[in-house]
Image (cartoon, rainbow over all chains, first blue to last red; front, side, top):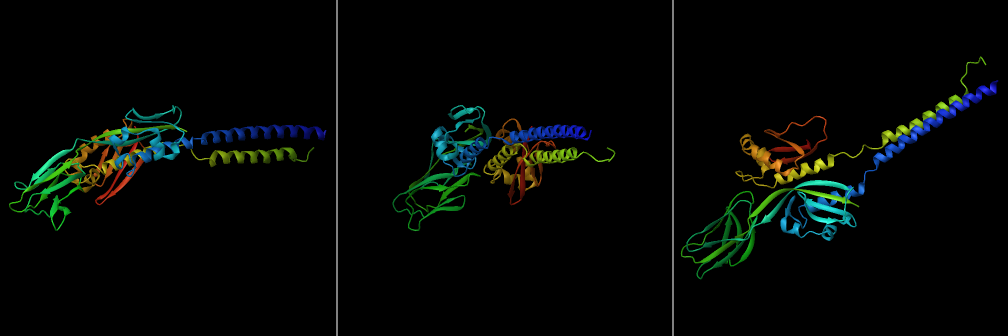
Length: 223
Length: 134
């Protein structure tokens, strides 16, 4: 009689234990499936997007401001040179839905969106200061740099060029130069020279007016 | 069998179940939560802050972000244009709120949604940009 009671208890225990194991393994499997989250795809898209909008990237003029010409010339191999993790990955980069780089079909991969501005430059604008008549020229807001070419006539010495009161060019022996000077983008700049009386010659100021447009950069990749 | 004792096999089984359940709980708790949308939102908030911090406004000779923080008057001046600018910058499905020392602009944010944020210090105080899927 005793042996039979033990047998029932044993069967019951085995059933309980098997049930618990099945439930436990199901839990573990679900948890592991949840934890699988394509880290490689995510790594590729974040790296490519970060490198594309970085301040020191060849595609930008400053952080988050893409250079329109550089963007037009982008290709999959340039993306690889910029962000090595993108090697051998199917990748698609679009600006407001317009494709700029596409290689393969990154259907089920990871996607990241970034807000950027695209800066395109106008044709160069030439302004001239005729030293015998005037001494200033105004550069509009948003222009970050300008080329100043000093070409003085005989008996004229031009020592300094000011931009909004700041000295940007100076030569004690007299300027005769063609250089790029950096200006503040945050307001209009007045470029001023002090030619003195009876001066002749000219100072040519050349700049490009930038135009910015907001865009959404989307990078999709499937490694 | 009037000894009032549990069968030894049942006790063993109970210990076994406890052990297996303990391991299962370890899996359920120990594995980190599935990926959230916060890194993407953080990136968008940072992008917005970067663009606002390197762009001139129509009047002030400072970046828009500084104009927002400088004074009550300057905040009121750039408030509307900043709102339009951010709406232009962010994808259409993303809502935002900007907090400055002089007040906030944008939408009130729902209490439970994941939010990405970026805080930029300026010499007049910090400006915080928060974005979420709206």
